Each structure stands twice: as structure tokens, then as C-alpha cells.
Length: 139
Image (cartoon, rainbow, N blue to C red; front, top):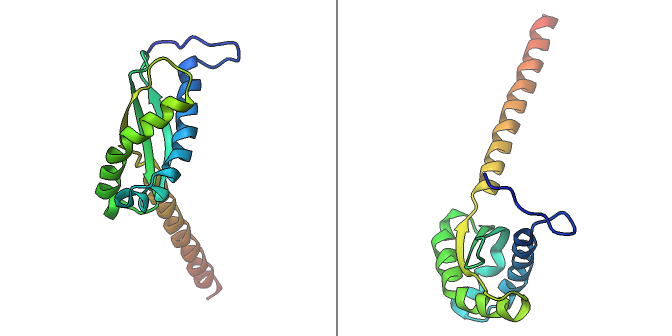
């Protein structure tokens, strides 16, 4: 694994650029006017951005409140809006080359919710078993 060179504040430049792209894209998604995708994009949250070392490509990780049933629509909407988003990023960022945007669904939020639900089920089952055990001890 390569070590990142830190800047003056302890962060690599690519980390700062990635974070700036994440913040700007979060704002820009609310400004998309195309009616085919505008209704879907407010449901999208940008979770992370990974920029290649030469800044030519950026993987944009996103999640959505719409769930898996509208996932394909959202992916198409993001792909359709990518040129607008990239152009607007070019106006905001002060880097020589604006990266090509590649959107990737981030399933970690859904996976975390699923694991939390499983833990809640086990905790409820344990509580019910403790109540049953206490009732059996009384008899």
C-alpha cells in the first residue's frame, strides 16, 4: 500500500480535493433541472469520493433513500447528469483537470441498517427468553 504525502495540515492533497468534490457534488445535485432526473437526485447522498492520483477519474460513492427498487433509475439519472456536474465542478474547483465522474452505489448504509435490525431481533429474543426464564423460576 502506498503512503500518501501529507500537506501542511496533515492531509494529502488528493484527500482535500476528494472532500471538496464531495461537498460540491452534494450541493450541485440539488441544482439539476432536468425533469427526467431532478425528482430522483434529492434522494441521493454522496458518501465518499476517491480521486485517482493523476486527477483524471473520480469514483463517487452514493446511497439513496429511495432504496433498491429505484436504484437503476438513479444510476441512469446520475450518469445523465454527469456532464453537467463535471462542468459545474470545473467552475468551482481550482485544479488543472476536472476528473471524469464514475458513480458507484454504496451499499454500506443498507448493510449497516440490516445488521442493526439483526442485532435488535437478537436483543428482543434474549429479553423474551430472560422473561420466560424468570417466569419458570417463579413456579
